[in-house]
Image (cartoon, rainbow, N blue to C red):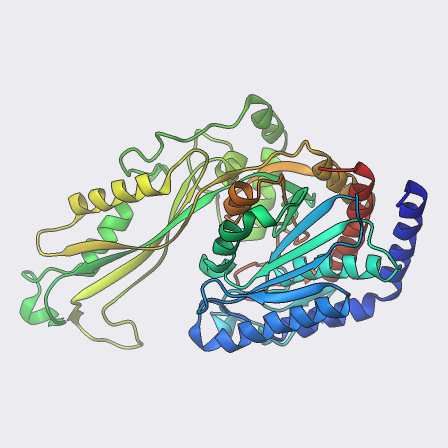
Length: 468
């Protein structure tokens, strides 16, 4: 396809996207009505239904599509491919159809799986993370294909386990990586920053997620009869969790910071320019009285290039309304650590396991269970595909792309790097205030439509580049 024909394809696809905005929005809303919560066993049928919904859509677009189960009891990966542009670059697009649970349900203004547009925003679980993202990519490709010829070769890999640190897609990539040749991978699971700029992630934090379990007596005990003598797992567990981080935000696990790779001088110089504005916007978005963290580091450093430790939940004893004076037999806490290059989650897990034994009390036995893990990832932004995406963002949104280390984790990113070997682009369209993982998750409708146009532009520019 010549540059002239690519330009004609671009204009036709953009015109079609603008003419079919209502239909595009309705298609996204249809997928959002599927409660594909991967973490809850009762929603497994919904996850399977969502996978089939996507497979059927790809087949209608002319793609060869099928579902892959690795392992069989997992949520299937949707694999769709179209190789109708010989000699042109190949692009792999990643997304996920599973979503977070809707809890707390009573905080939603409208039901989480009954999408509704209010004040220019589409509210629903998954509107931003990740159905809004992957539908922009599907729609961009659909509009290009409708012109008669896709300008590049495209593969979609959309998994159903990202929100529960899944195994199906990583195993598929490790098993078939040599057969998945591609010139670039678009990890389309990011968003815009607090200053309203498109972001291309130059790094993702890894994750180590554990439960700390504490056991005292064999049974729950009366706090009057046994108080003062019986070990209390909640008291001990609270002290352990509190001791993992000091009041200055410094994590106390021995050796935790030993392998942290600091940002470059150039990165720090860019972050200093935006740090004050970021802090102001972050306070506005969070509604917090003040930001917290390591005072010796910029807020933007703490966002993406510094590791973290947070308690995500703690439970034990009597938690219903009313009173019950009980000393519980057990308690547990969920604790996650976001890790940065070059930290090793296995090394940190061993250190944490030993450390909590030094923090417990004589009558309380503690042990760890690992829930999930993923290593951190570095991603270059100076290859031709990345440059094409940055140009497309600026053309569509009128804003230059910020190159940032992102604080979140996308577990499968390292599998793409190691098993497939192609350069990554990590980005997306969600706005910073989208309430991802929270009640009233939402996506600006205008962001969705402009995101479709941005990806149409990107694909056409990538077609002209020849390769990644």
